[in-house]
Length: 242
Image (tube, rainbow, N blue to C red; front, side, top):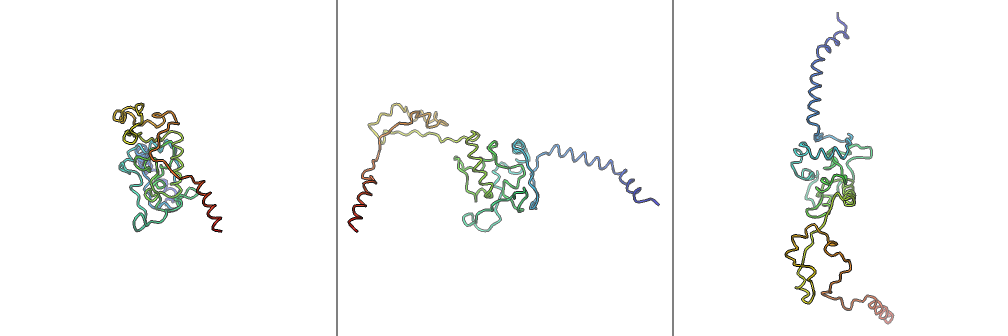
């Protein structure tokens, strides 16, 4: 009669090679497919892994990120679990991850659900996905699909990115023909508007007009708008009414 310990030891000795081969294969797959989207549906109560900004940048440049989001902004693949149109929707949730770092619910917002994504001014490519086209303004929160906590972090990191220079935004200066409104105005120092329209892209207003005290004649003057006199007359008539 063999004891239970001897039987277990013999079975394990025979299967050690199989276990080692499976472990080596899993290590090789993990090394080749390092980046992966966290597709766990039931996330409530689980911790969100923490990664550095360098890992986030490498993840957004990997094939796993491209295959997951197909070159579109991350909020395009998110839909709130509510009925009705966007106008009739209620405000989004306050947060998806609690103070302990655990998911508060299963259906998290686009940024909270991906373990590699978080807003940081050193990675402007993620912030620019939530900006309106051609502007530096954040899109509405219902369109972005973010929770209120991530939406506030987005606005804070956008301001920080502008201060550190990782996101620059300038409106192209537009040249006007002032002779249409001011026939007697000397605009020779401005040059030809047709020639300057292609050369002033990306140039700020301070470069075109370095003097801050440039005065242009008023097209429509404000007449009889001295509010101090109006209040004096009002007090005068108010006294008569009493």
